[in-house]
Image (cartoon, rainbow, N blue to C red; front, side, top):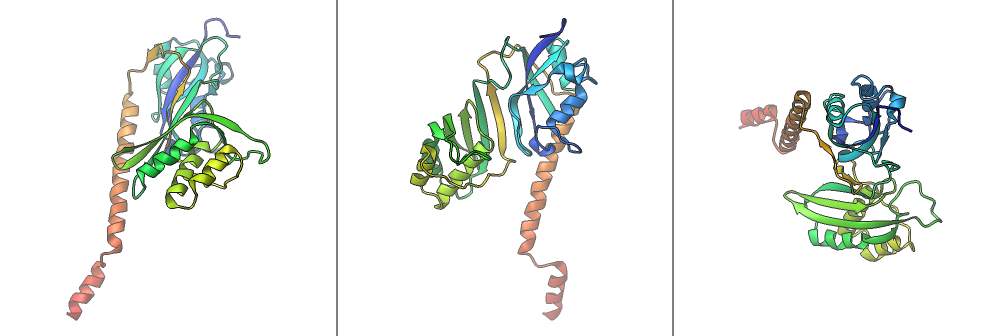
Length: 287
């Protein structure tokens, strides 16, 4: 039951997963939940952390990013002030839209979730990836795609879409479903890789998705995974007009660091085939 003068809000937000040890707060580690909880009272979002009743649609793992995750929070703020306050919590947390929560709707009860995974194209075969992706459509048994699931009890999920597109130097793998088991998206990507490498046949993968075979699949790396959107079938009433000065500065610094890191890695790769200065001078003396 809401306190007088407060509203239950759904808020869309995002973050670069490389800056956090996942969503869930952990002692001594920087997490998305920990940062938000520390800033709620400081920025006047909630009367107390408990009164804010913070909930989240999807608890992302360490390294996984989000563009359109959604949290629920109870606050006396109006929509525009709420967004301004939340965007002041941390320079690398971005709160983009808000709407009053429909009565009785829990934030985890989304009608759909959309993930995207960005895979360097390299030598991968796009047609093979697309053909394999089609095997995941419809209702499937996800015991080979999850973690910590009972092996003898079928666990079924309905997958709306697994689509692979090429975007310049990367494959963009979009995966849509109402709900996912832990690790499911990263294991789908791993399955696509294994089929392309010839280590897993499409027939064995189809059998696993039908529930007649169990596969042991690795987890694809978390860094390229993004929670793209959480869907509720309702419009967002307020949009953030930012970024703040601090957010813009943090984004620019992150982009600079990314570019600089690429240059360092290229220099290291080039150095492997290039003789050192001391070796070159010794060769010159011998000549």
